[in-house]
Length: 188
Image (cartoon, rainbow, N blue to C red):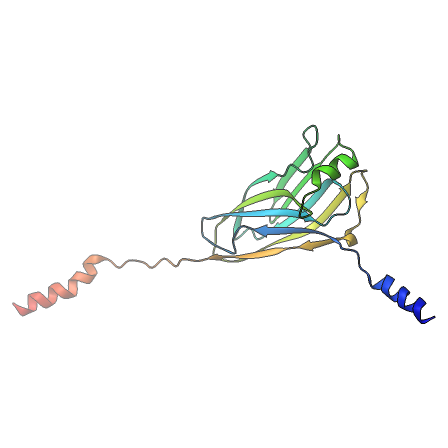
């Protein structure tokens, strides 16, 4: 009986590795006016990915959306259906493959480190301070068109800092010279 419970306990203690969708920045800190590159990665997915619909929240007072470039891990034969739109602080982007079968996508997405890039998003840093990039909505579908349950996907958000360079006003040169000129005039 003890062996039965030991095996049963071992069976329930084994956890399956959940898939991870994450945002990774090219640097940790930036200056005002810098281009910020954020890569969206999918890793440890145990099925082929045929489509995604994501909402990425960003701080619009600190960042300006610049562009998005989709990865090529959903494109087998023909181009995929791609969409992106910005509304306030929210960037919605999606991609859907209509022409490839599950096993074809699985072969394309098989990488040595079991991760592939969905998209690269660029922002322009416009104001000093901390910022975050957080997923608000994550919808994924497999090669058969079935939605991948949200509890099988972990989300990795990120944050960064835009360092401020304080502009020090240069005093007027004449105002600096006035005391020296007055001192020279008084000495005469």
